[in-house]
Length: 425
Ligand SMILES: [Zn+2]
Image 1 (cartoon, helix red, strand yellow):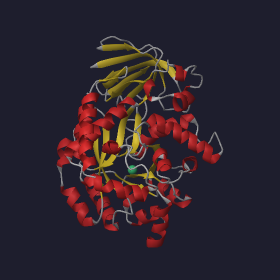
Image 2 (cartoon, helix red, strand yellow):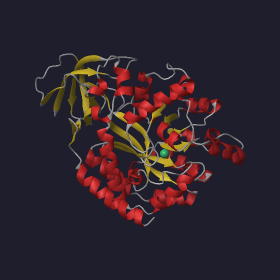
Image 3 (cartoon, helix red, strand yellow):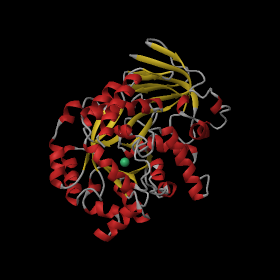
Image 4 (cartoon, helix red, strand yellow):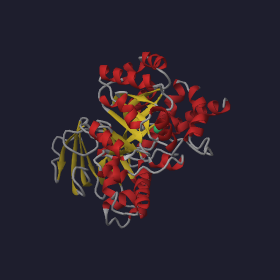
């Protein structure tokens, strides 16, 4: 199957500030050619996209997809610890169907906001995997590990995820929740398991000041050094949050090839702080972008996340050039892909990479006049400007119409699942 998208403004995210007019040829799941006036000979579908913009689909570097069910719930908690105390008992009661419909709800929102792949940290991962395959969205899916080594071995003994893995649309990662919920043994065991199975690991790290202070008290070192001593950075790894990372921790992560995923909405909402990511980037750390879960954000839109990342960087550094719009777009695409060790597949529009493409329609009041295209995307764009979305060459949304998800049915089922969970709370 060959599809030719014609007459686009293309932002490939391969070179600072680059955009040009041209066509994109999709062959199977890959980008086969990019350039001006590509031939339509032997092409199955030709789409004239004049007036529209193509960019790599957003890569949401950290989320908990099925937490969509708990959106706008327990919203008066004053900090992360209090909020987790309210949320954990609900999560303990979630079953396979809750995870499936929560995932489908999240996937609808991801597609509608131009996101083509995401890193998930949650439970019953086989149901999220099933939802991803049906919806056609790329997932880097981590089972979340909690507690001590014995609990970890129990969780890892469930092999239902193995049946769901198929091709490169899905990848199985492993997540250790955090140093305040997991033992040292869990971190060590997970790193060993990942090494043996060729898996990539991730964890929440240095999210709050309390986490940093407690680690210093309990372990005599900062959180990143603690995990390094446990060997967690000796396997491919990415971390979420890093709000309180100190300079020597940033240097350690950079030298170990561990990237950070920045989650500004969640950090603001839970009063965790502002991660100084422009400083981290200057120090050579790769920084991606993620939404975190919909119950601490309370949405899954990378469009909104980019805008907030730019705004809070500027106001916290008092420097508008500390994180330019193009830098934020990098964080949301190629740098998230690098963070997830997936930049060989996605994150930029290049021949040979997967055809994960987001098409933007700027011909609406909020993006008129366009002037600076990068400013327009970061500061003016909203989800309604996301016109079409492709993953692995498959069109998942065309002119705002979802092609793989029955959104009304997903909403109905999700509300039903949440109704039950809430009544038990
Ligand atoms: Zn998280």
